[in-house]
Length: 294
Image 1: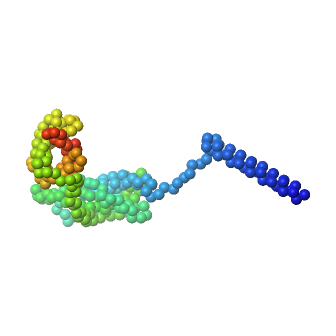
Image 2 (image 1 turned 135 degrees about the vertical axis):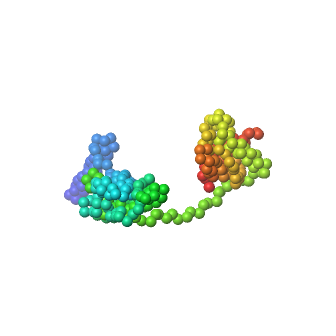
Image 3 (image 1 turned 180 degrees about the vertical axis):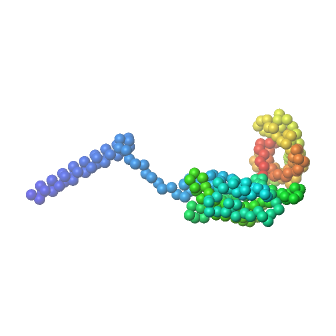
């Protein structure tokens, strides 16, 4: 009797395992071929994956307000009041806290740029706006001066736009820390005095043509022979200083400070350039030129 019971249990386990294997394989293949739809796995976005906040509207609103805030003409206070009305909540002073009774200057803005946005809480954002203002003495038109300001504008969403919800206030300009300039890193091995002189003579000729020649003439100095407009009619060559030459495989790396003169104004500008040159027989060519690498 016990033996029969064991045989039945063995058969039951065998057929149960067989049915389970068959069902598992069928489900797996159905999912593989899309016969059974499954919901895609959702991964919660990390801080790095979240889309950046778009502050375009806040910045535009704060810039428009700042333009009107710093624009006044003595005797026309009512005009300024009307211009500010659409920006301010009703409980704020109609002149946004600015009293013109003691000033002797009219004001307008020349340039305006939003600097930063900070959350103050309760849906209020503080937008810092840079404003280049021009002040003109009302009794002496020749007494005119430029004053740069940083204005913090507290704003809050109001329907499709915003409102200034508190008095704007001035802050000192941001102060940047000094950054120590890195010494130019010369890659490659030193070259002989003869090679250094040849490279310098080539560079002197190159700059004269690059600032005064036609595209076809300039192309003659490049390895790829592609025509380039260069700086003709833009800048003229003045001098080249601090030239150093090193060799990397079959090429030569040239670092130099170049002084160029603006054709329109006559002001001179100094820029650092890094050239990669190649010498073929008696001819030198420019493979690449990069500006500002120090």
